[in-house]
Amino acid sequence: MEKSHPMTNRSADSVYDGPPDYRVVGRHAVFPETDHDEIERINFLAQMNRHLSARVVPGVKAAYDARVEPKFRAENGRPPRDRHEARKAMLDDAAFCTWSALRRMTMEQRQQAGRWTVLRQAEQLAFIAAELTDGDERLSLDPDMPIPRYVSAVDHHCMPGSYHTENFPGDVTAGANYDHAGFVTTGGLLGRYSDGGGHAVVQWVRRNLPDFHPRDILEIGATVGHSTLPIAQAFPDAQMIAVDLGTPMLRYGLARAKSLGVDNLRFVQANGENLSMFPDRSFDWIQTTMFLHELSTTALRNIFAECRRLLRPGGIVLHVEQPQYGPDMPLFEQAMRDWDAFYNNEPFWSRLHEMDLDKHMIEAGFAKDSLIHGGVTAVVDRTLFPDAAEDSTEDYGRKAAWHVIGARG
Amino acid sequence: MSVSDALAKAGAKPAGKRPYFLDREVERVLAITMAVVQELAVARQRVDTLERLLRAKGILTESEIESFKPDADAATERALWTQEYLARVLRILQQENEASAAGGDVASEDVAVEVSRS
Image 1 (cartoon, rainbow over the protein chains, first blue to last red):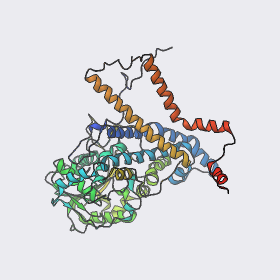
Image 2: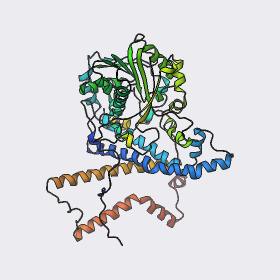
Image 3: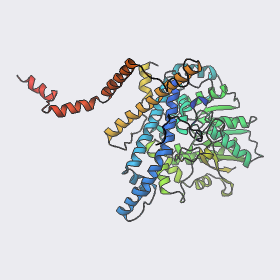
Image 4: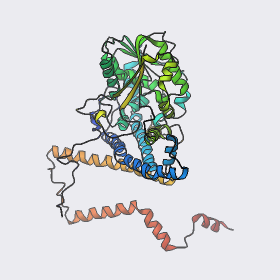
């Protein structure tokens, strides 16, 4: 018998593969304080998501192949026709249901953990945000702006109060919660300031459009500016405007940007469907990042039209999103990617990912031969953070590997 | 914000009807269990932090914890703690066993009717 030895969490020939310790995240003036146990709660939840995608999902796939799909065939005399039939068939299977229950709970635990941290210091965060933003003309709020049904009906990713609810005037806890604990879902794949998406877009533009020198840049649905700041920093001579619906996001966003030393940007409260405060041809670059899936069909059409109206000749529109469902994507993968739509309060996710976005861009007035298609993965500090491009696990819809759909003006 | 408000808001339900994937009772117990699993991980990391700080300050050496041998009294105290702990956690099994063995248990609700008769 082999001699037993004490268990350690590391052996000489194993390389650690997983989320970094949360303490490597970048902080700024309005970032919430996190005590030891709050940090470990976030570490645990990030590992929980990692465990689910790396060790539980393969069992869901095996169950689909071995049990769910054959049972469906036996009962219907044909394979599932679409992802909805595949998903509904999986709802009768223990592997899918157990994974789903655990994935939902992990999201609920993440929201509770992050919200406790920010709510216990809500007044202090509001004070810091006010110190940084009061009287600053780079924050334009419109508190009476109606919140559209596609945001108010269900709280996206089970985030109570969504992007827009203030617990009291000046409250920024929605922004602080979104900023500091998003790490749980991405496991650090978005990098030090959750800005790997923005850096990826900058890198894509520099490689593909080396002579592009934008003066005015707009990001729609910018939340706290995770993707906005890298763009503003990469083009310091440009002026950038970040638009969002949520008051706490915008207030927190400007405070965060100022604290991080980024000054060439403004935060404006507006609905992307109606940006009439900006004249035609106001921007050289219009960006959205992981935003389209939180809209509605009508809103998407309106926003594409606004992008067309606001874009200057020679400018670019870029939308970064999770990949579309194409005929080459297996139904199992489509059904798994649809999970967030039905069980994580992302109700437009499913429809968005089956839409012919090229057709909608053309209907908005872009020429077919001006359309842009590409792919990007998050760009992070690889000495501290995992690289999405080298990550072999698949977390259906959450991985920091995206498609780009866009157009030249 | 009061502690009571912060606790209530931290655990607030998001807008939207919650999906259930398992039997409702099973899913409820699993959700509670996973929260406990989380808190155990947090406590374990806190102990690890303490051990590392104590080692860094030279109060503990690398092997002292692994080679720790409680003396007879300490061993007894620790074993008793574990027994008490398990009895607390598994209380419902004990009580269900006692109920099976007793037989003929009456419900207080029925007794209430009985003792209220005039």
